[in-house]
Image (tube, rainbow, N blue to C red; front, side, top):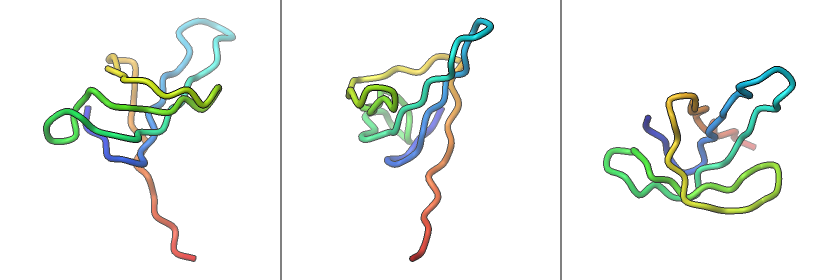
Length: 66
């Protein structure tokens, strides 16, 4: 997995009714965009080091010109 600052990491629920979780990448500490990452979780705003599993996917940050 490779991510950049501003990208989002999404983890889909594993069981019926379990919500998906999302976080924003704040810092990248691995080589070539790899983990670990410092992320901010969307649900509660907490920040943490995160080592994503195989169930995680990256949604690239898209810059929007104003």
